[in-house]
Image 1: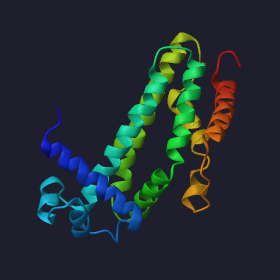
Image 2: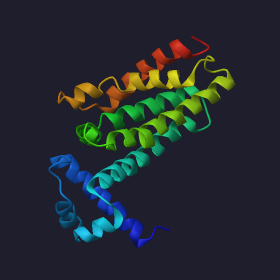
Image 3: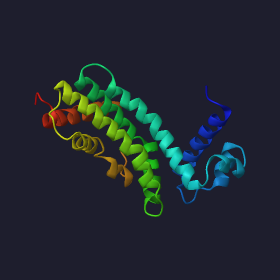
Length: 200
């Protein structure tokens, strides 16, 4: 059961992400976040040592919730091709969602002046794709995939899924429909299995 303290911390992180998305990291202030949450700056500093720590924890918290849901699609028992298609479809919807694009912009904007971007990658994104690589290793053992480096395999899958990120980050955003995500997922899965599947 979640405590009031945990619920309060979650509420602060959710509001902070909203404000960071709206105005960017530099323009956002702890006072602004406290006012929207309903409290004082002192309350925020009881949970987070700085605005930088608040941004990092908020991004990791948000990414972690979404990642768990997406990873489950690849880790359930059943036909791997079907699982992979569901996973890729869900991932495409997630990484091309407006909120995701906006948060990535914030992370990139502070990457050159703080270690937030690096820590977000190491503690969030990198761990997710390490888990995916481990899942692919299990498919190698089953004979579904060729016995090659799973980190490279996971990276190639990631690159296929993230092909439109740069375009979105630069502002040429295109909202991906469910049907479009399905079609692109089919193409990605076909390319991936052609390269790494044992039945290709």
